[in-house]
Amino acid sequence: MQKITELLRKKFTYSVELVPPRNGTDLKIVLDALETLRKIKVDFISVTKGAGGSLRGGTLPICCLAHERFGITSVAHYTCREADSFRVENELVDQYYFGIKNVLALRGDPPDLTEHSVGKTLKGDYKYAYELVRDIKKLNSGKYIARKKYDSTLENYREGIKTDFCIGVAAHPEEKDKDGSYEKGLEYLKKKVEEGADFAITQMLFDAEKYRIFVAKARDVGIKIPIIPGIWPLDTRWKLEQAEKKFKVSIPSKIKKEFSGIEDPEEFRKKGIELTVELCKKLKKYGAPGIHLFLFLDANIAEVIFDEMRKEKKS
Image (cartoon, rainbow, N blue to C red; front, side, top):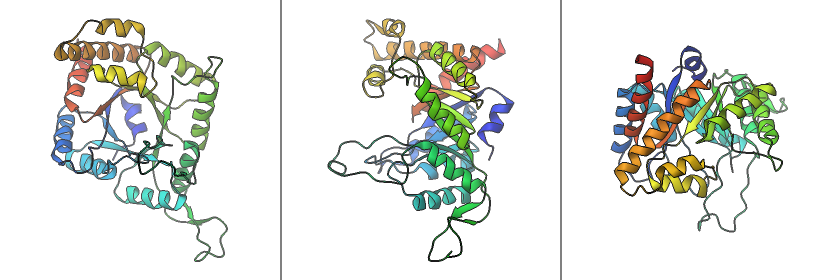
């Protein structure tokens, strides 16, 4: 399997994020999405991993299916919220044995306030994503946790085979300090890079100018890794509302006006795709190394958007 950094060195990449379906869903919906993505020749996919009360298993199996059955390079999301270092090492070794070289190291979203989480104190060995990056990098160096019972002569680590993970992390162009600067967010991103991150994917964004400014600021503080913009196609009114309400991402007033007065779902979808293509083209002109669409499992919208993007190259 190719590393994401290898792909980015070769060309502008077209990639997508998939969300596993809720537990109990027929696998066919995943296989159909992967078949569409194979057909449109996406460069890679990433597969999310739920945190806390989320009941969406299948991250690693979907990555393996994508690679082995459909020939698609995959990135497994890995979240460290509530995790202990023993579990993290075991699960990353699973991933290594399955041949999935790419991992997106994340802290993870807080759990929903359900009957499973209310009143419970969430504990784990990780407070920040950069700590997870550090531990993945240790595996790449052949350092494994030493257990006192079996490795009494060792202090912290024992030597083993060196893994070969390509480590991705999240970047947050929307995350500003109270004074309007990006200092705090860039500080965390730089820490992740110092610990071993190889590339970054941003949270969803809807303003190419914000991406341009954020990347420029990142370069100013010495962050040199590729930063891929994450895009959520606004093809439904629900997405338009949830982007700000749930994900706390601002949508430019210009975009909101474009949707004003549109009631028909098909017209809304058409306008959303048009605006997404426009945004992606602008990001490419600003030097983005690729486009990463957040899809859930709607691979058809990726086909439409990427076809429009590729037409520009042919013309």
